[in-house]
Length: 160
Image (cartoon, rainbow, N blue to C red; front, side):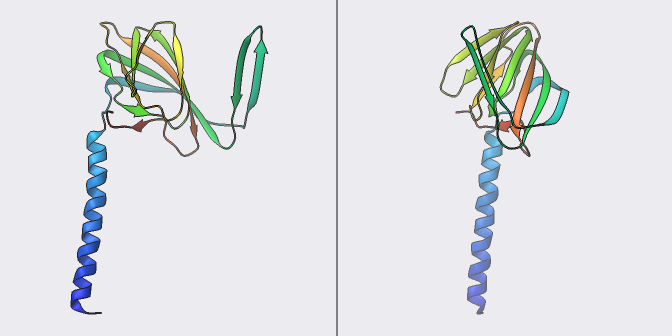
């Protein structure tokens, strides 16, 4: 191999590595980390069997169906006034329950929902959102995460 070909290959490889590192750095730099949030693992991670549960009682319907290896965990979050979870998504569904204070959730599509103590909701996998405590009192919530085995419950996302 000629010296010129070797230099060209090394230069090309260097450029590819620089582009890859730069792309990763931009993605990480644009992520919006959580602030003012304390997380405590309450239960899990626990492997779940496949499930196919249905109920239709008095007009109330629910269906939970899984296939493959899923992990469940329950987290307790305490969020100080002004605290935020930062922009993120989840690789699986999560069920949120507000037990103190008020949670304000902002979706990537621009919608905002407010959840006071005693309310909750479900986030579907892949929904980009942020949430936080925009009130003056501490916020506490419990979240049950269902994630595919090997995945983390949270995926940092850039602000839309």
